Length: 232
Image (cartoon, rainbow, N blue to C red; front, side):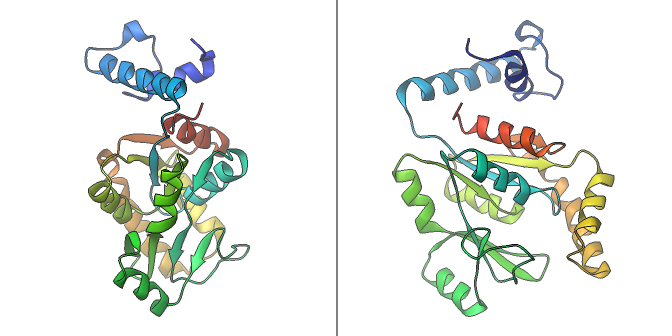
């Protein structure tokens, strides 16, 4: 009840394989997971339980930033955590909105003071991390929190906050991932090859995550991520 057919198909697919089937067509392994997902969703809607902390990760160029930006612009109830990084801003990126762009010394200070929820060195080049304070404050206020981070960071969050829901964002195909990386034109050829090699390793880790979302369409992928936060 309350789920139109297109949205009903998504939770039916989510607890198991991608192909949506009727509830009666689910096997003994899938049906309990589907029931658990629906019961949890209903309880959160009825009791106002604070929504989940959701971690969004995936390989380079899969569109994590694009999906999270879409969520920020279209789902105001979601608190999108702003990561810190030591890399330089790309064209159009804004400090404090896309990232906190920090110097190495500034980043070191946050790490030394245990003010990072997670952090890692990515592509053997720059460091990325999630400031701890804003995330905990938002959760204390009952807000839904979305972390858009890399694979290493997701593993750290799983260790420090096991209640977090981990979502892996996938490209439709490997060829599409290559096209997106080359098409954005922000890295040298050597850097592109290094990132693609890293992407193959990252894709192999997708089974570590609770859910997988294919980013064929930004709006649809964003909607699926928000559904996991039990906001709708």
